[in-house]
Structure formats: C-alpha cells, structure tokens
Length: 145
Image (tube, rainbow, N blue to C red; front, side, top):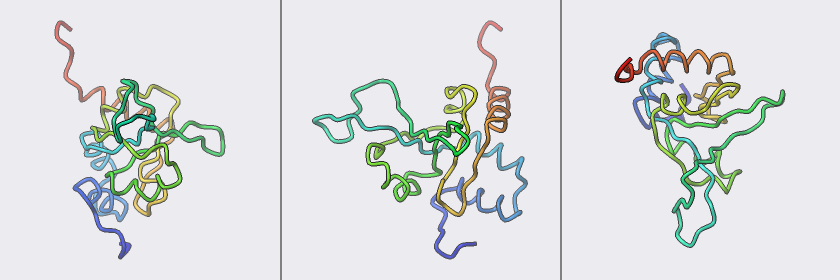
C-alpha cells in the first residue's frame, strides 16, 4: 500500500482491500452501492460563499479521449481537493449515496472514482449500466406494485 495513502473512511479502507485482493470485487461493489461518495458541483457566483442558488446540480463531468462523458466522484471531500485545484468552479459538492447518483445519471455516462489517486476506479458505461441495474434491484418496490 502507498505509504502516503491513509484511508479517510470505511469505503476507502474497502477500496484499498479490494485493489490489493483482500476483498472480493463483487463484495466491494455491493459495499459501494450503499456507501456515500462526494460529487463535486459547480459553484454559482453568489454574494454568499458556498450558497447554491440553483436547485439543479451541475456535477463535474469530463470527456475521455474517446469522447465519452465521465462523471467525477470521490470517496471523500478531502480526496477531491488536489484534483479540484484544476477546476476552481467546482469547489463545492454533495456527499450522498452512490446508489442515489446512479438513479439520476442516466445511460451513456462513465464514472471515475478518485481520479488522480492511486486507489481509484474507472467504470466504463457498460459497468455503470450494470451498477444501475444492481442498485435498482436492491431498492424496495414502490407502493402499489
């Protein structure tokens, strides 16, 4: 393990264990679905620092070399700070369940968890689709169904 990497939370501990072969990848994915992640959001100019005027979130999405839209997420707000230094409009964010994000992103989006960090994962669009289906199958059925 990288001597400079210190896990900030349970998700990061499990991510390290999974990448070092100490935790089954399928078990890690189940843990990830229930875990909280940090989603950087664009700050709107406002008279109040950190106050979001719009009800519509504008998450940090980049384009991969092959033109794919990639949603950028982090395992903690602290993990995001070095990466976000290059994206000054995205200093704020939302700490929420990974499954909540999956419910809202739609198809055709890839995800990069902890980009630029040794312990990170890139999910291509097919994997994101599988995660969406796995997340949906864990959700309770709506009333009346």
